[in-house]
Length: 221
Image 1 (spheres, rainbow, N blue to C red):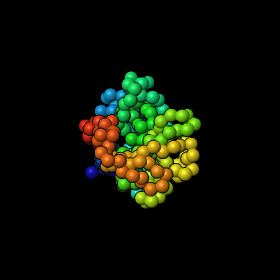
Image 2: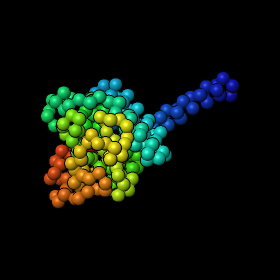
Image 3: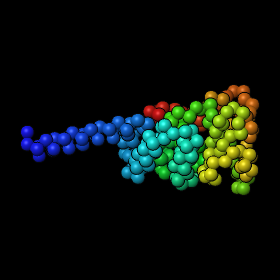
């Protein structure tokens, strides 16, 4: 076989192999059909955000939990804060991670939801991750952050879109905790430990959470 033909075949084989690898990589954390759907609904910029998240997750899969927290927090904090009325035309709308990436903007619940499910996919136990309602004292308004407990008795780390630096809860004197939940149980929030379980769980206390879970199932996540 002529050398030029052999080289051409080799290049074609490597190109096909690279394409196969890329397709596999795309689907590792976020399915290619999901990416295509985001592109169809929200456009190419949204698709680039989802592909960037998928690439980040691939790069983090063997990293420490601390590194995952840092990079995921930074990634989503690069998106724009906007209230639900501006983004969705509704007073209170809990967007899925793909909807948040699709719009490129959202409120505090959307930041927390996206971080929570990304860290969950990366293998961080949900027993360590809590949605925490707080009062942002500087702004005198309700706010939500993601709390990470290294152990059940640890003072949690706070992942927040207002202050992008991850700090322990006792250093966030600008926040007054109200209550926390992690999708399994609802807790009265304390800065140390998990707090007291509230009877009834989140199905009654957080109907928006249940709606969100249903939407994410439809997205295949």
